[in-house]
Image (cartoon, rainbow, N blue to C red; front, side):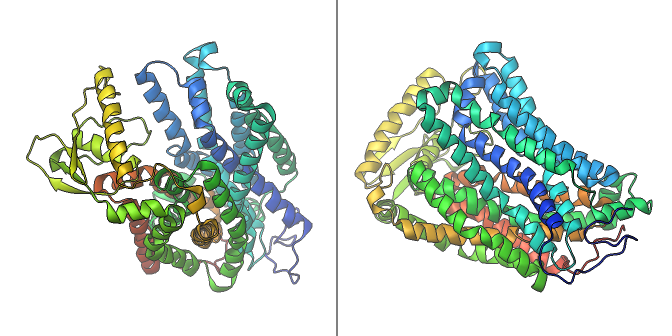
Length: 567
């Protein structure tokens, strides 16, 4: 049996006397992290170019467009847990190395092929079908990639250093963001906006093949993880990891606790600090995208080292209290932090919210909870049209009940504007032409009224206190580093070697893919429902507090667990 890091020739664990990281350990971390960089590079790339990609591929009648938009969304979030099941099972049966070599090949090839895919104008309906198929493959591969990388690194780590080693994987989101922004900006600047929109957008997808080649070359030279190699040599690998992980009550309970008592809260704190904060700056506070991106990027760059800081700290004091502490502090401070963001990023909006109240007078039975996963759904009731319009304009409002069946009205100062009940197209997916015209007219009227009331159309660049905004964003990302830095090590340590890959991957991807991924749409629906620009924060706050309570009561500390135990 080959000697591998963390083991002697006869398969026993060793604790190194040197604190320096060996060449082999650095290689393990680098090779594993590259795949996670791929994950985030593609995530940010597809998001940043979504509007261009939609024009290239999602063309045709509204029904087709809606279906493909829904499928593309599903590929990004919903299918990831299924990838965790598929590749987690393989990882626990045949090994970590080969499984997450397969996931990176699928992920990298799919990303590269998006850059080669002919448009709708060239091959018709086949274009969106192939694109969505590639996105589904990416989603499935991502479901296996993270669990494989985290397991592989943790099982190579020396005793007492698993938090430190796995924390490097957690930093790769920032690297993926910077890499995608750098490539897009470079290509866009070099060829100009017109050429970039026409065909240059493909280049960022095509250059991903370089990352793929480097990562595959390095991973092919890696050894199997010592914990799995030891278990395989002893003949203790699982024959049915899915049933062992989810049908045995003892293991199923740990999977459930890993989701509700850890990853669910970690996910909403992560998405709030890195995605909802950007959404809030651009969509609610109307800060221009370039300025908002720069401020978020600076905060990420400043806070990224703290992933490693909290990973190292978790090796000394434990993972549980750092993760749950981050969830608790975030839940207690989100409202004042986001209120301060409004004060420093758009003081004119803050003043208007205080001094120019708006009222929606509507039948409460006609006001829906406007949850829309795809961003394409239409809500035809007069109340929904009014509240969605005001929410998009960052206007807080109060509701006053009106008689049943009455048409909603918007009161701004001493003036009232009547909404309308829209008529839909035959496919039920869009307003008909007459309703679109009425919506445009109402937007114009209401827009002029809220502007006269002091609500700014966009944040004044001269009034943005950039250092304070960056400081507040930095604090939000520090919360992210607290909950995310130690999470990989803790998930690995919660489960026995024989079902580790399967068991840890599922709660991670349900937490991050579903609870985290649905945060922006859920938050927007809450804001539109209540009429308060901060009301969407209740979603991450409540989820984080549930995790704190469940985690404190039922989740055990793991830093001293024996990860070489097969059962």
